[in-house]
Image 1 (cartoon, rainbow, N blue to C red):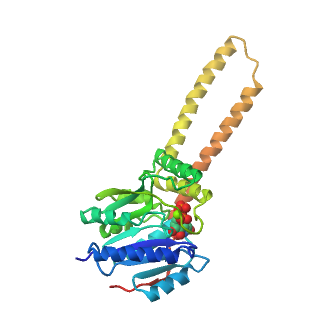
Image 2: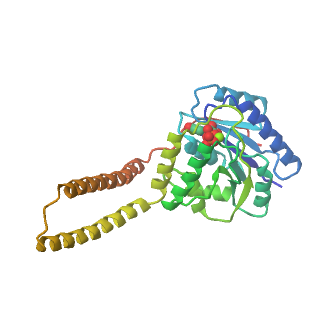
Image 3: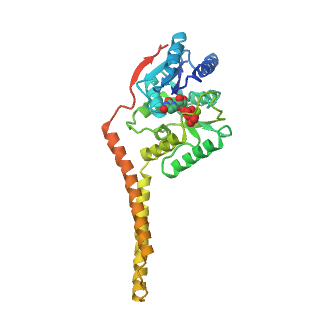
Amino acid sequence: MDNKLYLVIPCYNEQEVLPETAGRLKEKLQSLIEKEKIAEGSRIVFVNDGSGDRTWEIIKELHEADSIYSGINLSRNRGHQNALLAGLMTVKDHAELVISMDADLQDDVNAIDEMIDKYLEGTDIVYGVRSSRTKDTFFKKATAEGFYKLMNTMGANTVFNHADYRLMSRRALDGLAEFGEVNLFLRGIVPMIGYSWDVVYYERGERFAGESKYPLGKMVSFAVEGITSLSTKPLRMITGLGFFIFLVSIGMLIYSLIRHFMGATIVGWTTLMVSVWAIGGLILLSLGVVGEYIGKIYLETKMRPRYLIEQFLHEDA
Ligand code: UDP
Ligand code: MG
């Protein structure tokens, strides 16, 4: 049997959690190898996303001590999604199946067993889905769930309560490699690949050390990025809004003509002011959204590389 599993873990300033994470993942991998679910040469690959702390030194030490650990060092901080993509694209030709997860082990490692079972049954993509968020603070939970709802109403279809904890087969990764877009939102792109897919539920735990690298500001920009990279629904909504306002203005025209012929027009200053402001605001808002897309076109046409790898420490089995 030759089912090489590679775990891909993006790391940004994770020196507090890395040693513990590395130990727990190695245990997991070894138990899976013993159960003959995965092949001997399986690896744990840490992607260092331009950390400012000792993260890369720790990864290098791990790799030197044990070839089960591999490391990818990005040239600078490129954000979680790009770091993850760098990892996936780098390992895809070495592995039969790849699982991505966060460095803080908030995603239950024991869900891996079930993911692999589904893979062995022939599923190409298995999404890890949080069954509850009891361990998150109320604020994090509310903002995160609002995030998924907003995404879906805006036309960016994602799997509810699924972060980037997922298994992908090599075939699915080859599919992912075909998507050339620079503004990358993996959770929205992966469902577009197709193939057979399934879901595994798990309890999301607490970060056991260090701080969240996703404060509210980053979450909001992540949502905006997701919506504008995946769908043009906001543009459609502006068209709808414009049409609605046009209808209202016809109504207003008829109303003011009737009032005029009734001789009851003392032209209202208030009405005038209100409409000037309302319309001005709408125009600006619409321009802003259109601008978002123009910005995207601008960035896409540059065809910038999504990541650059400085070093790949790896021993193929
Ligand atoms: N991460 C990254 N680059 C960044 C920010 C975060 O690679 O610029 C990684 C981080 O090390 C972690 C994962 O992305 O492995 C998720 O981050 P975090 O746990 O802080 O997010 P949260 O769970 O709070 O949403
Ligand atoms: Mg986390």
